[in-house]
Image 1 (cartoon, rainbow, N blue to C red):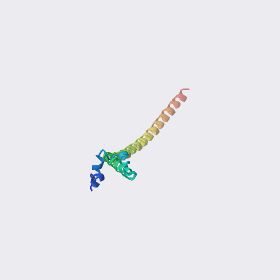
Image 2 (image 1 turned 60 degrees about the vertical axis):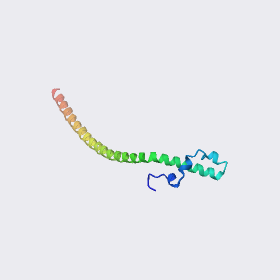
Image 3 (image 1 turned 90 degrees about the vertical axis):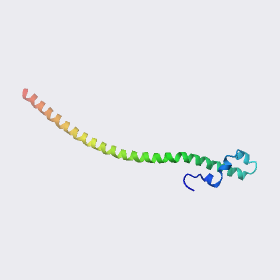
Image 4 (image 1 turned 120 degrees about the vertical axis):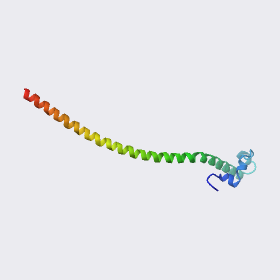
Length: 112
């Protein structure tokens, strides 16, 4: 059995699912145990159909999450660079305005 084979198709249960008499409420009239088996087989059929839809989406999600992780590493590196540059810029502005302010104070003091 390969990945594309349905376990219901391999075991031959698919022919029962398509039968309109294979309904738990109808099968219950014959046997309570068979009703349980009928519900179980129908649940497996639903699970099989859902997993065929979900499995490719899980693969795409895993790929997208891996790409997101890569891009987040790049973003965090750029954020660190920005933080470093911002810090340098802040101190440069601080020193510049300190020097300008001191020069203005000196000019003011000498005028008085």
